[in-house]
Structure formats: structure tokens, C-alpha cells
Image (cartoon, rainbow, N blue to C red; front, side):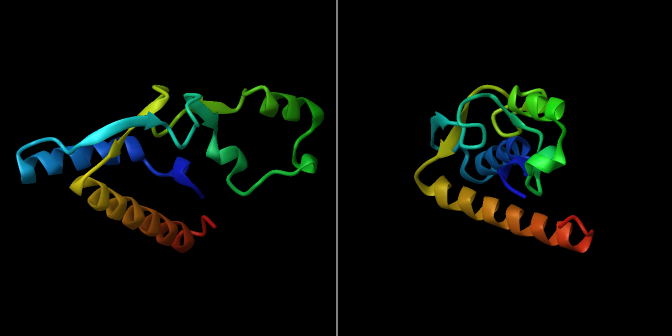
Length: 116
């Protein structure tokens, strides 16, 4: 389980909406290279390697497909844009708390449903 499993794009949209409602202005931010895909715009589907892969898990053709990006999906954080907002100022701490809470909630849901 990692960042790829969170719906960060929708969380960010909701965060901005709530911030504007509460503060009457958008939160301050900078654009940074996406930390989920490292600016590539895509990453391996988490369903493929969520629990780690070993050479024995795939045959030779599947490994080639894995290495060539056949199993890649559009980045779940930047939606292929290569960059994301990095909230700054007072919004940074609030956003970081949101992310931590979402990650903790997801871990609990996955453990309760046998997803681990």
C-alpha cells in the first residue's frame, strides 16, 4: 500500500473547495514534480505490484511487459500532468494532516477487509 492507492486528485479538489469556503480564498501553493510518478505521468498499476513481485511471479513475456510499461496506468495523483500542487503556508499543515488521516483510514479499511 502506498500513495498510489489514495485518491489524491479528488482529495485535493475537496480540500481546495473547503479551504475557500472557510477562508474566502484559495490556499497558497507551488507546483512541484509529482512525487507519485516522479514526473513521468504514469506508474505501474498498484494491483500488479502492491505486495511486491519476484522474478518467479511472472513468465519471461510478462516481465518484458512489466519492464516496458504495459501494466502502467495514468498517474493517480497528477493525472498525467507530471506536476502537482504543493500547499504552502498555513494550508501545508492542514493538508498534511488530511493526508495522514486518509492514509490511516485506508490502512484500517484494508486490514478490516483482508486487503493486507
